[in-house]
Length: 73
Image (cartoon, rainbow, N blue to C red):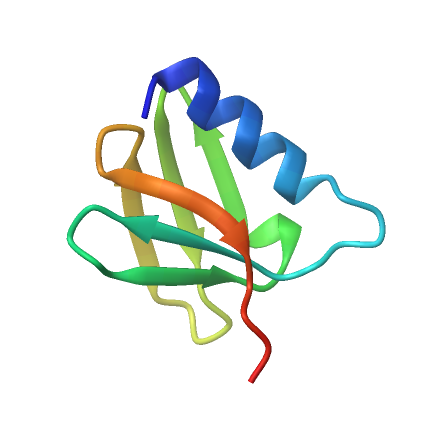
C-alpha cells in the first residue's frame, strides 16, 4: 500500500464519529483489530497499535494489504 494512501485510510478509520472498530490486515495474513482511536499512532508510513493489554504491534505501509470494518462476532 502506498504511504499516502495508508495514512489517509488510517486517518479516515480512526476519526470516524462515532468511532467503530476496524481491522488492519497484514500481507502475512495477521489481522489487528483497532478498538480505540487513541491506541494508534502513525506517521511517515509507519504505525504502532497498542492493545488494551499494553502489547504493541508495529506495521508499515508496505506490510498492510488492506484496512476494513471489523467483522462482528
